[in-house]
Image 1: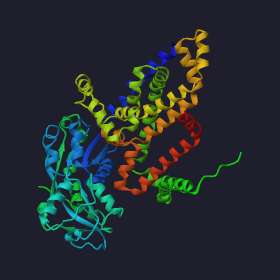
Image 2 (image 1 turned 90 degrees about the horizontal axis):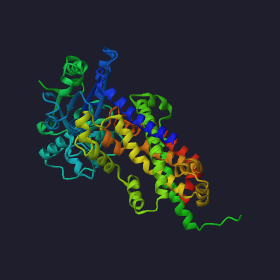
Image 3 (image 1 turned 90 degrees about the vertical axis):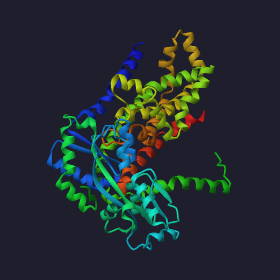
Image 4 (image 1 turned 120 degrees about the horizontal axis):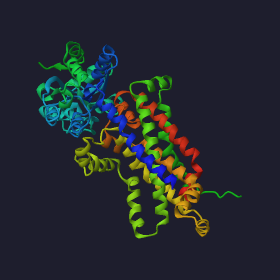
Length: 250
Length: 263
């Protein structure tokens, strides 16, 4: 039964080998892993490349998704160094993992429509328009709910509840809908394609972004995670965030 | 041989069926940005995701082969109650919704899971969010395809050949290794390729179980989903490669596939 031994030893060898790449990536202190709200995709990607250009050999990798999804993954033990949520609730839900978050940015949801669209006012969403917003569980959806409630005039229902701000924006840009409740910053990032119709009650439409480093990465071992955290809080990052339409906290 | 004609209604429905399947595939070819095809593939993380998908799916396929062929032989030989009960369980992932499969694997292997909790306590390690999770999910969804096709091929083996071998005092192990496997090679390969295609296309269960992190767990299909939010051109380009792989696999294996499912 020589071949049976060969097969068994191969399976054992394979199972021993498999975890290697994964654990390598986790322990590599030259890689900074950032979990960030999907509305930060564009700005953070460019901040990441700038940081990498200034620090050769350091890799910043991002996982962009809805803040709630990211928070769930972090509390399940996902290998993140830094977490940026688009609301307070998602950050609070990982208080054990991210003990000292700070107020980072403010953003507002707006009704975004393609340039030259028939929809001019928020109440126009009632006229048979096909519009969508984020799901009631994610920050951009919660802000949309509270903004719509403050307006009190929209009686129609969205055609879809998207899982993240990025996917709501993608469907609007692809022309699948007439309007979408997304962030002001999404409209500013697409000036030639979109126009924003703001809600009258800015406070109701606002959401507070939080920034924090995970407890396990705050230890001295993760020098580069801490360096990137400082960079995100620093002058040049704030300049880019402000020009992208975010309001800086502090 | 004289060709039998089909009636017009049947033909019409057949063409309708072809349209439903073919038009969406054609749409991908039309929407692909041919002028920027290669630059859109080179961008941000696409290659990393494709590479990760290819090596993890090949490894998962290999594990399916090592574990699945003996299981298929055992199911084909055994006529007892145990195999009758086990067969539907083994084949269940084929019909299982991806979200349920993902949740099932989390329930077993996450830090708070059935097996995951003791593993985490002893090794301070958990499978979710690692490349191992991608491979595990691949084996979970791929294995049933390999077992299904291999078992059906094993069942087509002539009884007399096995009897003759046993009369010549061949051990059960020898019958399996020297007769069953070589005789059923094309069926096993077909099962392996179908399993591999399923593993390569895996999305929902892996995303739930392994997460989506560039370089570690973000696979080809997850990259397509991600690119939908960033660059639809890249999403179409990545999708076209997938279409080419699956269509060519099915084309080259059309004969053995039909044979394997004929029994």
